[in-house]
Image (cartoon, rainbow, N blue to C red; front, side, top):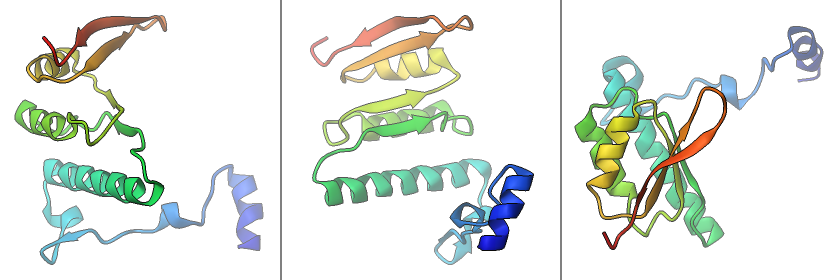
Length: 137
């Protein structure tokens, strides 16, 4: 470890640690990494994220903020809608979702009876609220 500190400083990034571990992620004794499609791998990671959310909620005694940062890039609209439907209830509390397909997300969110605000960050850094949703629509 001590030798790696000097190497890390020279290279300007960390060369040793948990982020370098190659985890073996399996489902029914099959490697998700080698046998799963990109969509299946992404679905597996979403499932892990939701399991982590439940674990933290159980340990902390309250719901943490759930961040779904650009996780929909390998999903079709139906899969995105299933995930939004799953997390769009009172159990999850506050959620931040980033997505590069504004219209897709806007259509899915407006079809569900849940509270939300949709923000659009412009290239100049300005932020605008493009749509609000409410349960009492």
